[in-house]
Image 1 (tube, helix red, strand yellow):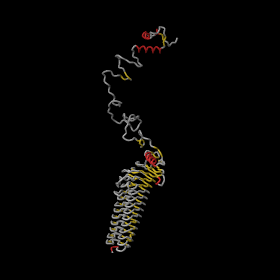
Image 2 (cartoon, one colour):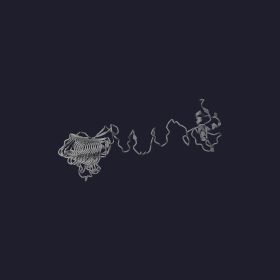
Image 3 (cartoon, one colour):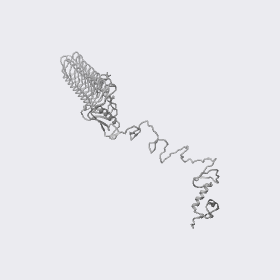
Image 4 (cartoon, helix red, strand yellow):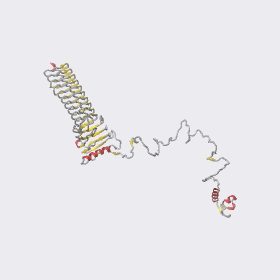
Length: 509
């Protein structure tokens, strides 16, 4: 017989009652006996030392029960004083001294700028969040295109479709990352226009984003022709609000012929309608066209402070107008304007090289020509006529009444040519004049005052150099005048005359 088996009649009487269901000769293993006793005790209401039980009724303990080695409190007892050297996770405490924490201390429901967090719920931001300096996309945004530094407009044989494609290309360009980086002065994006007509209808191409340039693909600007029919105030075929923009090789026309009357101010529609004083603008080989009756080629009474090279406009172009005038304060090279162009009736304070204007151009018609002018040509009443010519003029040519006529010619004039009554005629010629030629009567302060310095200057007409009831009070060296010159013809000759020649009635003799 297995010695590990137990016989019922070998058990204590109290235990044998728990297995009374078995016969006297029944044998059981110790393990089976133990589980049978535990089940029987639990059924009879015994409290076991292990396992889950629900205990009811009043229990009286001989000694205080403990939990984890610490005696539990019973009814009526006060809570023991907690040690004051411990920081507790609950309750109020006053903590002093320097505390060093192995990890950060975090308050609930806050978003921190470091560390990992799971954030839920709807968050409303006052402005677009950024990642590495770039705004993140929000619902409804499309991802910006990452491309090379140009977008080529798709062209067809339909000019209206081409115009639509041009507008779409500009819209796309505003969300494009050229070379994978944000637009900047050193990371520009060019919209390339193949040869075509781009008809915008009654819409405008609005250049409102910096560093996006419009470039005709060939040097022949007539082949990249942008036109519209825009006849409302403060508008144009191409409107520009962004400062740092470049345009190349384009013809831009506003074909409107119904807007009337022109207000002769900065609100009139035009082919090119820029904001005032965009000093970082660069335009090269651009032709602006309009009829100058209903709309202007370029916005008038506006300051043009950018850089313009090989550009052409009509009447009032480049900061001019009939009244009030604008300002031409930028840099202009090989540019051509019509009548009242280049700061007419306003201020012409920029740098002008090989430029041509019509009548009243270059600060004429009562304006101011205070800039630097080299190889420039104006019509009658140009270069500060009825105003002031205080700039520097080299190899420049004006028509009659030019270079400060009926005003003042106080600048520096070298190798310049003026027409009848030019160079301060009927006004004051107080500047420095070298190798200059007058083409008519009363030149060089005639019928006015010639108080400047005149070297190697010539005028064959009458009354020049302060003649014809004028005053010749300056310094005259190697100069030649016609009759009644040098204060003659009833004038006054009180200046210094060296190797000078005049016709009959000169020098008030």
